[in-house]
Image 1 (spheres, rainbow, N blue to C red):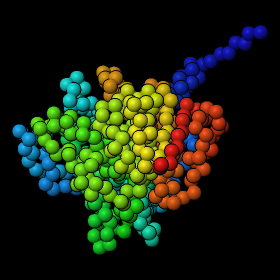
Image 2: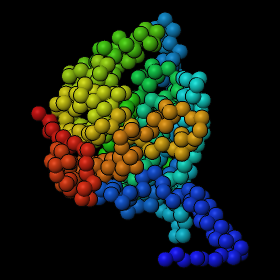
Image 3: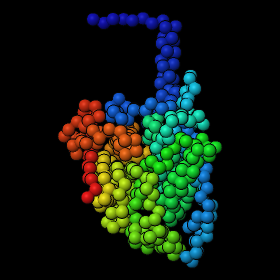
Image 4: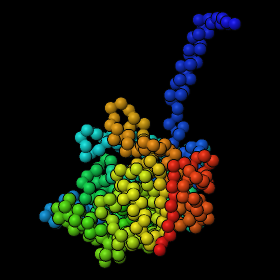
Length: 437
């Protein structure tokens, strides 16, 4: 049977208008409809935001009289005042009826590659800029975040905001001469990562003292600190926490820094390095830490790491390496209580925010997209899984919470449904745990 439906010209016009309006609504979704770090339907239990509203502030802090390694000549290194921009997230008071939405700005591209010009972009986060801090009676644990090379202080906002909502003060560093915007010679990144982190720790300790007249006064507990680092940030946080670099790094560094021996102060066995290890650091998260495949680490240096450490890696990491890279570091850190979370078939990008929409526009280079994206994984899913496990790990070692059940898992997620994960959602993951010897 055939039905004939007659439409008047006006009816057809009305239908067309409705369809166009619907299309515009789909295309013009509000910018905050999905923000980096929001939980997907299959997000594990601890990925959800915590109880606190989040504030965010930007500061600049200057570490005076530091080696200006990029201006070394004939082994002589002048000094300069090294200014670091930091982003600080913290539990905050948000006035009723105020939507906590912050805008972050970054750039993509590369100053070291003329074919990839810098492109600025902005994205939203769920925090309120310059909000009043939440006073809880006791100070919140401190977490310091170190990005990759190049990177930026807003590369992991899905995680930094999430942790602040759970009762941490989170400080992410723009490592000068190592960001997307000011990328310069690699020697600066090698030398300054760990020292930048320790400087920021000391700066927060000073500003959080009662009577400092700073918004951090009484807010952050620098005596209870965790470190998070990605790639070259992982290289930095491991060294700051006790893993000394190998003598091979000294040779490599001198070769790219005009004979400078400035890195010697961070080598295993150096008495000044041993004296720099900070007992205020109680937990480390190292995403794809760089250097093992290139001999930057050895067993003697890694044996110096005694701080509980959570490693995260992709099994196909082609930047830091896996079997001879992150996994080898995990196995050699014999004096640390440590975990290794592996994303099977993932490459290097197991830490950052998802690719910004600007990286997908016509004319952009694939490298700009692949600075964030994973070929075999949904980056938002990775973000949720990271939120879950970092919350569990830091919760145990910094907040003394009973989160052990989230880490006491069978090694293969494909064989057992992991506790805290929705049915059928935990696939392609490995979690190994080795206590100190």
